[in-house]
Image (cartoon, rainbow, N blue to C red; front, side, top):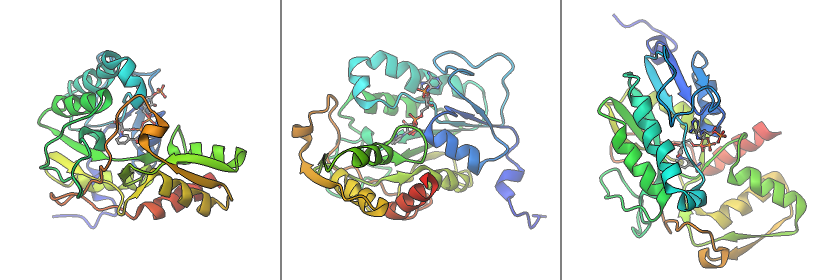
Length: 272
Ligand SMILES: NC(=O)c1ccc[n+]([C@@H]2O[C@H](COP(=O)([O-])OP(=O)(O)OC[C@H]3O[C@@H](n4cnc5c(N)ncnc54)[C@H](OP(=O)(O)O)[C@@H]3O)[C@@H](O)[C@H]2O)c1
């Protein structure tokens, strides 16, 4: 008989490992799964097989090469982490959650992408993430999300707060659209993903915006008077191509997350 357990998932998880524990999602997962053991890059460089004797009942694999532009310069380095790392995590033999990206899509669909849409990555980072999905194996939940931000690590919100404190105006791209997703919300939703069958799921914040709109919301919520100058992707001139529109939605019953603006407020609350 089922117990009226306050934490039915947590009670049967066993030994949970979080890779990439120094990253923003890794940090958030360690809060949502307080009994989990986090491994930083120093403790396990996932381009190598797992340390001898490492055992787990569930692996939450967040370690990744996330430098989208840097992946263009060193695609093999990115693949070693984003594909080889997933292979090594899967080799532990435990059920696995891996996170993938909206950048597996080319951004030409004018509606949200669902799980059955065909990926067509534009750049090296997206390609490595797509191959990484394939490397996860059959006992895995592959969770695609988008535009992650949180109160730790390097991300758009923290960059905008720093620039906003230094400048009167910041130029921000206004022709890429996505759903900025708060890692705290994504980490909590992961607990619900574990109740679903293994497979591919899209889990991203509700609502969508451009980077410029997101920047304006950040300054507004943070009480900064900084202006946003809207520029194009071409004007910004990043090395890696990025999808113009990569809003993710689920057709497979994945948990829906709060609106990105709610995530932004939760993140700013954490930053004080
Ligand atoms: N960030 C986004 O916008 C975004 C969007 C969609 C999906 N995702 C996916 O979500 C997951 C989590 O991303 P995130 O935003 O939390 O990334 P993050 O903050 O950059 O964290 C990634 C972590 O992985 C670590 N790492 C890198 N190479 C490693 C290696 N060889 N061995 C072990 N650890 C290594 C990094 O360590 P160092 O700090 O030492 O480099 C960092 O702590 C990733 O799979 C990412 O592809 C991210």
